[in-house]
Length: 216
Ligand SMILES: C[S@@+](CC[C@H](N)C(=O)[O-])C[C@H]1O[C@@H](n2cnc3c(N)ncnc32)[C@H](O)[C@@H]1O
Picture 1 (tube, rainbow, N blue to C red):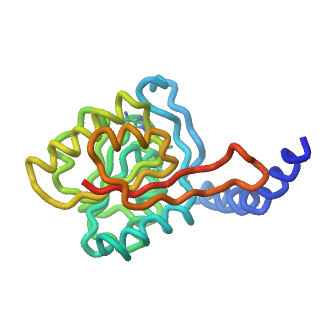
Picture 2 (picture 1 turned 30 degrees about the vertical axis):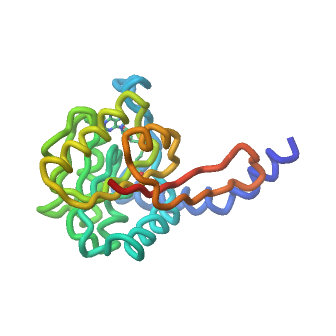
């Protein structure tokens, strides 16, 4: 109980910040709120919740510093939702940004968000599809990013699609996996773990998020 109260208090500044930011964005016609598309079953995919910007930037800066510079990154968000991380990727100066989103309504909201905020670019490659079935479209990208988007059956197929893409078009590939609940699935598929970053949530002993970088 004591920990629950402390946890609630520790989250207040960030909650207030996001409440204000989201209200301003809503005034402008944007929508980045959490969303569960009732047309998607939990066996196919999880709900939309944007990643924390500081964690996203930290992971991408690590890739930039040690493995692949921003100006050579071709970034693909598997399950981009309402597009918050696509915008963050563009802000980092990444030249090609794309992704796939299963939910039709979130795909539409994302396009609207990008348009309103002035991030709608001709070379942004957004697909409304299932990550398990997307194949040749992956050939253009070398950095695949995920934030706990879908369950194991989809993950296995999506990773296999990336491996097949690397066979079709040989290149160095990196994968950033935030909140990596299916780490072992990626290892079993033959990916190499390069970096492991843990985020501990204060006053929540069970609340550790694992964020990882892999190569293929
Ligand atoms: C946790 S959110 C991550 C959003 C965003 N990538 C981020 O980092 O802020 C997961 C997203 O994956 C999408 N998704 C779930 N299953 C999917 C699938 N099979 N194919 C494509 N997208 C999927 C969901 O609709 C949701 O928008």
